[in-house]
Length: 66
Image 1 (cartoon, rainbow, N blue to C red):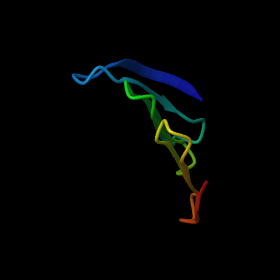
Image 2 (image 1 turned 180 degrees about the horizontal axis):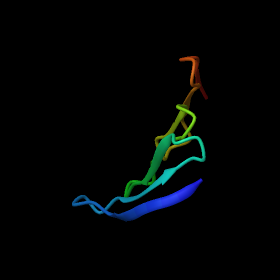
Image 3 (image 1 turned 90 degrees about the horizontal axis):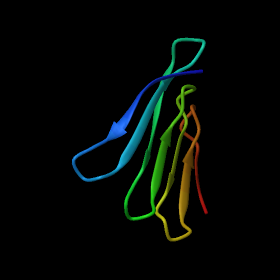
Image 4 (image 1 turned 135 degrees about the vertical axis):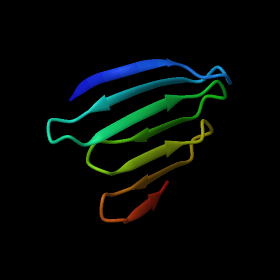
């Protein structure tokens, strides 16, 4: 994939956007509270709340929490 942009939003959270070779778009946030969120180019997502709890959602909608 190719990085298409990055920066910091008004809350002080870092983000980075990217585009996959198939044209899918994704991004991730790294937040000041230690949490982070990934939206991947294949449509899956991953969120970690910064306290050890995470949620993954596959492109087909299957969700796994740990």
